[in-house]
Structure formats: C-alpha cells, structure tokens
Image (cartoon, rainbow over all chains, first blue to last red; front, side, top):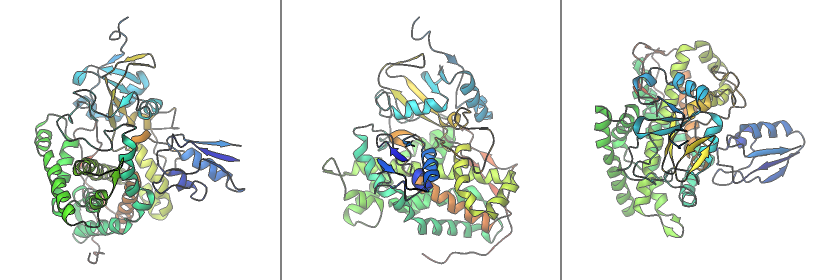
Length: 63
Length: 411
C-alpha cells in the first residue's frame, strides 16, 4: 500500500498527522512532506484514517 | 436568455430578522432548494450553500478572489472593509499570498502552537480563578472571551491593558447587523486597533521582545525586510481571528453541554473523547458561518452565470450540514468519523490559527468540566448574537456552579 499526498492540495490542516504522526509527517510549517510513501505493515488502517481526515481531499491510497 | 434572467433568484438576507430567527433552517432551506442562488439584497450577491460548492469556490482563487478588485469587494456582504486597512494574508491571492502566508505558518504551525500550551493553561487558570470562589459569573465575559484574546494577543505583542478594549470592538463589529447603532459605533472605533498595533510596532523597533511582532520584523518577503504596514495588516487578521472565533466555538459547546448533561458526563469520564468531540463541535457550530469572495472573471458555474465583479457568499454552515458529505448531519455524533467539516475554511486561506484554536478549546473545556462540572447556565438569560449571518457567537452566558479553590500561582 502507498499513500500519495498532493502538495498542491495540502493546506496544512495537519489532521492526517493527528491521525498517525509517524506515517503522515509534516514540514516545519505544518504542511505534509510525504509526497509518495510506502505504508509499513500494520499501519494500513491508520493510513485510511489519515486519508479520510483530510478536509482538502489531498490524500489518495494506492492498494 | 440574458444573464440576469438566468439567475435563480431567492429572497435571502443573512442579516435579516427572519434569517436570525433560525439561521440553521435558513441555510438548510437554501441548500435543499437552490444551493447556487442569487439574492437581490445588499446590492445583489450569489450564495453558495452546499459542500461541493465550498470546495469549488474556496480552492479556486484564480476565479474567486479575496482581493479588493472592485469598490465593494471584501470578506463580508455587505462589504464593510473598503475604507479599512487590508488584512494580510487573507486579502492576497496566489502568487502574492504564499510568501506572506509563510510568515504565519512558521509561527502558528502545530509545533509552534504547542509551545504556547503553558500560556494557554495560565490564562485559562487565571480566568476561571476570577470567578471560581464566587460560584457565579458570566462564562463568556469571564472565561471563553478573555482566554483566547489574552493568549493570542500576548503572543502577538499587543499591550495587555488594551486587550479587552480591542476584544469589545471586534465583538460588536461581528455580532451586530451592519448599520445598526452598536455596529456603527464599533466600526468607528476600528481604527483604534490599527493605532495600538502601530504603537506596539514602533516600540518593538526600538526594543524587540519575545513576541510575534518582534519576530516578524526580522523576516523577509521576496527578499525585502517586512515593513511596518505589512505587520499592521497581519496584526489585523491575528486580532480578528484570535478574539471572537474560538470564543464562539467554546461558548457554543458550553451551551450544548448545558442541554446534553449525559454528554457532559461522558466527556468527564472519557477525556480522550474530547478530541473527536472538538471536530463535531466545530462542524455543528462553525464560528464563522459564511465568508465572501468576488468573481474576477466570468464563469458559468453549475448553470449559473457568475460575472466578473459579482459578489459571492459561501456558507460554511450549509456545507457542514450537507447530507451528501455527512451522514445524519442534524445529529450531534460525538465521535463522528470521517468529519471533514469546513469550519476552518478550505484552500490557501485555511485558518492559520486552527492549531492554536484547537489547543485553546481543549484547555478551556477541560478546565471548565473539571473545575465547575455542575455549571448551570441560566438559559433564560443566555443570549446569542443578534446577527448570526457572519459569526455565530454569544452575547451573554450567565452561570452558577459550586464554588471551588483558585488554582493559579503567579506569572
């Protein structure tokens, strides 16, 4: 599983980070610096929660 | 058919008595019957009253601008900002927006906001201490109003002996319908806030301190040092954003928990529940119910002829209760998930203070629930703002509770 965070859509709500801080990391300004990232085994559900937390709909998941 | 004839006209005025009798019902009726509509009030404006419309308009700054592109532009309808100083970065669009916005992002990020937790605790403790021994007070004037105001304005570098004065001016410009007497008086005093900011900036130029104004002076925008006018413009947004919005949210939550005692007990028994509850309070009671934009080019949007210069009112309230985005939206579901409400806005102008707001809300709710768990609001004397088309705030929250000990030390 991979997560994609569209940097054009991310506006720094940081709710993905609140859902799973190790997977959805932020830059110093509080915006996502994830880009594309592999989801470690066991964090699949957290990845989905992070995606569903984003008000901007900036996060997609590739199964 | 002419553009004018193609407008779906509704009789809607978010500052009218009919609207204010039940704002939720008025927004809901629009969403169900005509989510993109034209009103002839206030010189004519479009209303966007659903969830997808919020995404479409707020993210598309190339078409829907916050800048003053016409004489009646501005963030409110009717426009009340044309003769006032600009608010930064809100009244800038990309590409000018980004470099100014980054100044605020740096000092209001989740990490930077968490560093203010000791001051949030201090002001919450101090404000509750001021009434806890008496067993009665006004939770608006004594707690939910001053805590965000003192926390934010102290951080900014605003003189503490002018905080209440500034908060009262903001309160009256936001809570009373445009052109009422009280609103007019407050609008005439708005320059007072600019003046206080200018004086604070002049003092920091001579002697920098550990506050946001002093930090902003050390920064650059596009290779140029940040000048005083830019700091005033940023300060206007920070005062406006810091003073009345978190106050409204916290006040709405306290009124809600007056009516729902079982939920009050659950939040006491399960402190972790306050995290999802914060998002549901935000969805259910968006402090800023609506925000305006101006079209800077012609666009046919969902069959409606929006023309260059047209004003557009975007309803966050209508989006937050849209059944296409939220299951059973009329129901308060404390652990609702997902909960992608739009109460902090969407797009580049997302509220930069959202992280700080959540922390303040969390601390005030926690201290009120633990220190005055049996608070009783006198619902006959609890007053919402007379005008709730813009900010859904409160004018009075008189309360009684079992007296308790003061908790604060010094600082």
